[in-house]
Length: 218
Length: 218
Image (cartoon, rainbow over all chains, first blue to last red; front, side):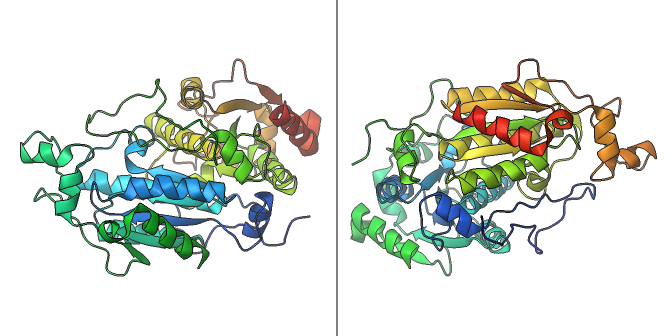
């Protein structure tokens, strides 16, 4: 038999405009989900939200962290901004309202996957503070742990790494959309109180993965 | 050490309009994900897509099936059309184009969760055949198993059950949006070759759950 705690519509969840849409409660608790994954009852799903400039190292850390978690027997999944733009968010561009919608949808998906019991490693430039705070509130409303991870790499380093050649293209005027932190119309708003700040230049990938793991267990 | 097969951008995946969006490959195979969940390597994630009229019994079967799977130690998650309209799809209405976008996003999320190793139980009226076929193709492109489950309950029975009072409201003209199968502008297109057809009137919830489980193992 499963535990007693049903999942339910969080009180703080906004109701849709159409009042004929009801909520279908399930009967599975987070502890039961953990047990079904071979975990201890307290090892619930959560979201690690990596934010930072293009080239800061978000995806590199995330790929290594996902691999490490899976090796440890902790079901994890990487949600990548670029990958999502091939599917769920393929209809969105890079205007401010599209960036906001991109993050709103990504946040909702991360929350759902974390509710399902996964450790979600979300990598999104997510330049706007208000958008990230909204994702945090979605998680809080669903009683799902949310950890904001600021990948704090100086823009000069990002531009030198330039893994996608975007900084070079921006310099020569070949980009059709604004590059975050470079274009005047694409600012990056630094996190004010992130749970974790990773300095890739000083720590390297291994160090960043290690500190992320400790944050997960903490 | 993990297995050799990396995940990668499927060849058949459409590229986004913006050519500056790249794909970030990971290094975790479906077998490794299963192992991390305490499963055998072959027990990969999959999507069961329940389609049928409002009141056909989709959610009732899904809640029972999810509970049963979790009890069996098979990580599962229910994606419910009404619940998603409180979050990810809260910006969408019931016009034909909104219904199509509702299903497109739901399909993308189901696919992602199944890729993560979960058995996804998706419950969406999903009235249009073309929309369901698109979801099937998304899954095929990602090498994820997709099972279309037609909950085939006569509309007279659905209208009599009327769990949300929608059929009564439609009859008295109180609905602001068309009710599938009732309104002339909201047709339901029956599946032509679903993997599974459930007759709730003849089989009951227990029977429907049992046949769904056998399909999952099959």
